[in-house]
Every structure is written in C-alpha cells, then in structure tokens.
Image 1 (cartoon, rainbow, N blue to C red):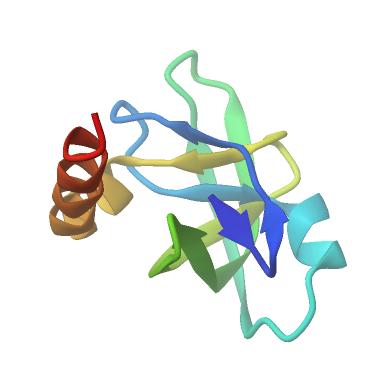
Image 2 (tube, rainbow, N blue to C red):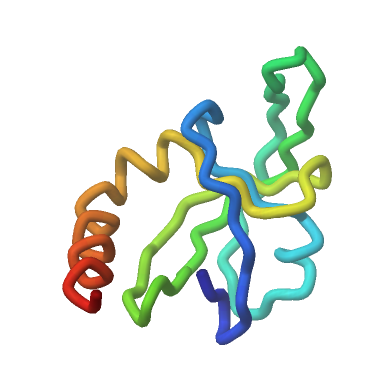
Length: 104
C-alpha cells in the first residue's frame, strides 16, 4: 500500500473487527480530515486499545485508490486492515488478484 506517495506496510487481520492506524502516521501526514473520537477497544488478549480519532485515508494499491476509514491509536505500530476493510473492499481485492494472475 501507499499513502501520499510513500510505501506503507499493512497487516491484513481478519480477526480484528476494525481498521487501525498508528497515531504516528497521522501526525506526519498532511491534508487529512480527522474527526476527534474517544473510544476504547480491547484486543483478543483483553489489552485495552485507546482510540483518539477517526480518519479517512486515500490508500493506493497497484495504482488503485482505496478509500479507507480507520481508527487512530497510539497503541499499534503498523496499519491493521481489519474485517471491516476486507468486507468493504472485497471487490477491489478480487480485481488485484485477477491482475496478478494474468501476469504469470
């Protein structure tokens, strides 16, 4: 994935209900619309995850723009694309898979 022309490693985690993005990425990004949001989530091991805001990112995958809603937290180190993202973008992923399979 890319964000604002920079490569952005992402973890695809179908066991995570929502998409999370590190606060450090949002702090350095420019021209993002950020909605303040205070919420607490819990990881599978019952560790609390603090949510400080919500953002819509314009991610790119193989040149294709993928609008992604994410919760912002200081408690993760990389973007976690959750089940919500998988459900919302399943058609885009099918197109990417088809493109790759035709190149081999």
